[in-house]
Length: 354
Image (cartoon, rainbow, N blue to C red):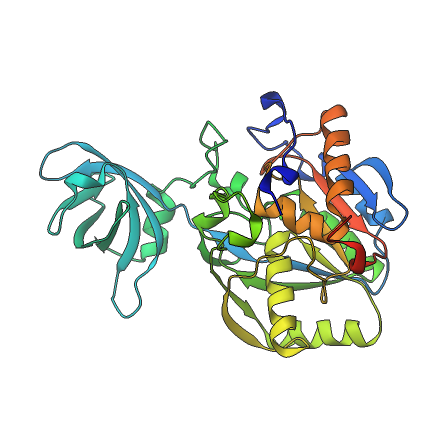
């Protein structure tokens, strides 16, 4: 499909630059994909649309404060290092994206927090990538928590006042370069209400990479190569999800990363299994969802793979109609923005033309 089919006009002032003080008071567009209806609510109202037996699947990944700003030891010049992931088999070595990387060569040293954390370049890779070996006292993640900044998306122009602002309240497993932002709207109080109602809450983990921010650079979506991310599903989660499927109870994905995990596992095994692996699944119109029955998601960038994922769930034309309504109603967009809850039956056989 032509990438232009997933474009829409978005005024810049609707791109949210900071979170609301009360997470569950953001706006919620409730979309019935079967009857093509829209309701404008607050996120806290989602309790009215969930029911006993529903299974809410959330991604419990935790964003690393992986953006480090320091100095090059040899030149005293400023340096910015973004940690991407540990290098397999090498202790304290991370693959990093380095600003002005041309001057960072093998043997170059960087210092952060007046020497509390230092690193040495041990390998040069293309496109500004470097393998950096870190030196520190104590526990690395605790040092990173003290010195690091959140790697915010490029459309957010100022740093968070608190790192916790760019984290879900249930973030548990460190490893992501970006947050599963549909989960921002939940509070512990809201989860307590849902559990008392009989809604099950299940955790999976998908480590979100920087690829989630990369634009689609091809004109035809079939030529797009999706970024790969690692995921994990535990035994208890798999058992709860299989039981829900057998009993025809709704599986509701909190965010697109939960969708990618659920659909990847189900496509691989034909059921849910305790497993870990990597996925490059690309969900776009013509894809038939097998695992997910309803979706909680934010409003995504024009021409992005995430708009395509939502379009595959409820039809491209209806998705763009909902987005146009959101613009008209002045919803807040992207990571710190408002949310959608999409539910109802849907005939996937018409999705490619819908």
